[in-house]
Length: 394
View 1 (cartoon, rainbow, N blue to C red):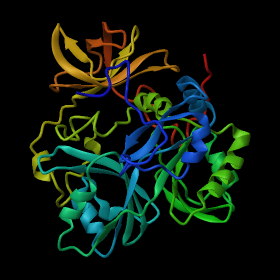
View 2: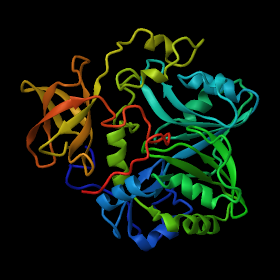
View 3: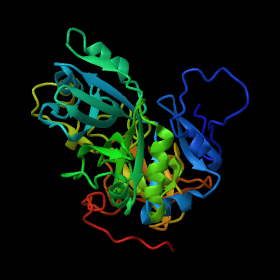
View 4: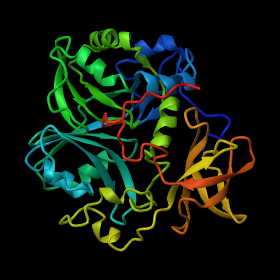
């Protein structure tokens, strides 16, 4: 049974005492978030803020859309280092990693032998034989270790934490915070090292929002309090605020960004959920290639547009009164003004434009139209800085 029933959920709270939180990890900015009244989920055994008591989810959403918002994530970077690091990663991921150049990032998608998805994340090539893979929540470390047998590669946990700075003013904040201004050639999916108040920090032009944005990586040797004080000072003139996953979730659904473990899992292939473009079918080999060559190409995951309700996560999707699929994500978009969501169908027979019945948060079935994600900005111009119109809050 899932902990969420659509009306309540189980989140992490801090209570006096010690013990029975073994294996759970607070990020370096936990004490900075504490006065804001954070409520956390557990992600990769790390705490990640879902919402804060000092502002509403809608306020957080508009901070992201109009200014700049920061999320201290639970993503878990693993380090791959050694002469065979690239070859191992090329075996594990569906994309051709051998083409990746130092100073660039790639979207890393890993499958089981049967083509079912394990996890996704951002792969950064730091040096020729050194990579970080910032993975979503999922079982990947042991999988990678098992497949590295006989290879000259070291897989380790560098104890690095990922934070996102996202929104239309995000690059202005980066420029203000960097001791030497914006990095050169810092286009979409680039990585660089910058100096923030004298501290050398890895940054990437990536994020989970499809807004203009970047991420920074806090390492064990950093003075995290000083680093945040420096970034906060740079972001203050632009209205930068810390926000939670609930606000980001609305934007990622609008953008059609998937969540590992809910929108896809071990029973879905990349083609099922619209990620087939990240499978290099001509690549010599990777785990799952033989199975994916035989799997159907029809998409089973679709966007939901519901004018009269908010799709309920895990709610039933009906077609002609018969069960057809399940809602995997749901929210109400303050920008679009209607309920949005994602739903995984049992077959690939459904297409954008079809109308179905969806269980919503009010406990009733509502009519919804299937749409092809993203819900807007189809060419991804916002995150690339090619579309700079800032939406107005109704």
